[in-house]
Image (tube, rainbow, N blue to C red; front, side):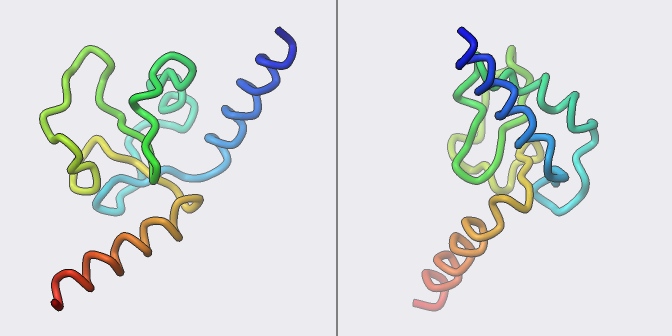
Length: 97
């Protein structure tokens, strides 16, 4: 069990390392520790996204489908910048077709 505990500590440390911002660029309304607790990363794997995290309260159901980038419950950090810039470039390429 010591190994699993180390992984949880590492996950929390890495999550807390960067400032979280909302889909429209504002700083997330909760502090980093509160955001981490809200996510329940060890129990709520569905809240972990490839480019950020879903902050929808656990008892609520998402009505957005996969439209996370425009959702006010989506948060991300600088760690995902490259992924987000790549997604933006792909979207712009589709628009110009």
